[in-house]
Length: 394
Image (cartoon, rainbow, N blue to C red):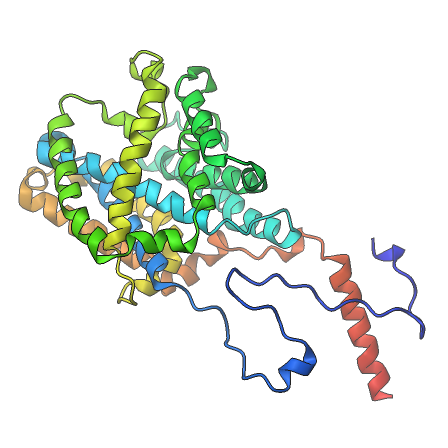
């Protein structure tokens, strides 16, 4: 493409200034005449503490839920709490992911970030988890495959598909009803199979699309004192219902990974459960957001590393499962369950810290400049800038 550019010459029309698209809420760059009287620019957009707090707390709940899985069979109370947590922790995280994907389009730099920040980590971590299970659990039948995500990596596949289809959802007149229709279709389609965990991709899709539709003022509506008070009886009622539902309901519905027929239910229960769980999840997610602190907390900075905590804590949980750490009888008593919960919180918190991010950045945020072409306009601007410097030095 660079060969099609006209040769350098004195009469060449200068290239337009580099086009940058600032993040939402960040003003566009000023013209040179304005910059002379403008105050020094801030180094970058200030992060909203509310969203970082929400992401951190959601990932903590995810880690707690995974640590409860080997223990919940012996405690109806713990399984009831587990059911309530699974109703909203991933929906909350997915809604936030959708909210911050609103600006995604097919611009080359954003596509590069999608590949390096989502697709490449999926390839690396799916391979690592498969090998970890094969040799850590002595499971020779566990093959390395990128078509059947194992354990936590389904979220990266889903995020890649959701974000790649964002321009489509932004152009639909009623995207949320369409997304709900897609989720209901998935719930009655057992032939979809396990490839790329498409059941989860489809059934969790409405939460991502809802995040795309939300605006900052929608989050302000739940960040009120009234909502914080209302959230108390709502969560109390949810916990009572969760305790009641333990022997009466299949908790696999909350995983969104199977169709109704695969769960041994009539086909029509699939769409009904999609709508019912969507309503319950939104109610509890709104209550969760109402309790999230709005000011900076000691854990606010960890919100930027939640994907690290999410992908890495699974190795610890599965190592405990493979090596029988959860088989000790004292862990299946109330004090043991509390100890496991606190350990899960501490571990996932540690895995979200900047030192851990620096260690694993090569896998989570590789630059991979060698893999992508540079934009032709960017190269031309650099040549023009170099030519001007050379002319000035003469």
